Length: 259
Image 1: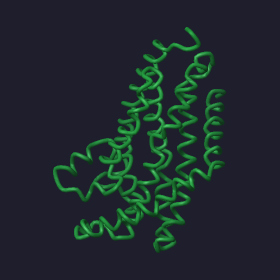
Image 2: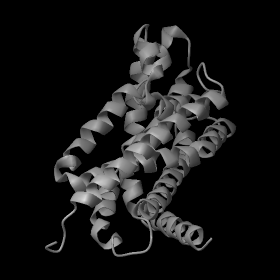
Image 3: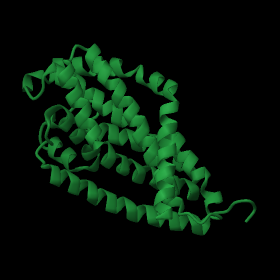
């Protein structure tokens, strides 16, 4: 109970920290309307004939995926977590659990900030109040499970960076792979076969496309809620095993303060 209380307070502190730094959130949010306008109009020109979405739904879709992607694998959070590795070896708390709770609080806080701002942006684009509120509410419902997935991915890079310093150079390209394969710029459902089936089977679609599709449609694309949750659980198990291996390997080879 003492450990749970500590990690809860650690996550709460990081959560509050995200809300106290609204200036950075606002600066990053300035690009959202540009992306939403350009990408939605590109979709309108090339894919609107498919009839899968309306223009307003596409605006909301791009907004949701941008909220999720702009808070995914932040280099600053990863470097801060790996920087505390040496000190954590002299503490009674688990480094993985401590950094995991901090990352979860930061992720949830920053995404709630972005989601709140997204609501007003949807209104500015002329989307109705009730529709905008529904989209934001559905997205908010998914932020907790998606936050845990973000923690596992960030911890993986933090552990690897302790062992191999050059890992930080892989963070950006890895994130771009999720950008391309996750349907951030365009819905995976609009892709032709066999690309659509391949992308649907990959992990990025569960983190970006499916949550955005749920936010605008109220259901997951060709999946039930239980099936989507199961896919996340399988991802989480694989990431937990990788995290444990990277942490053990990094601790075994770690050198600091001359020893």
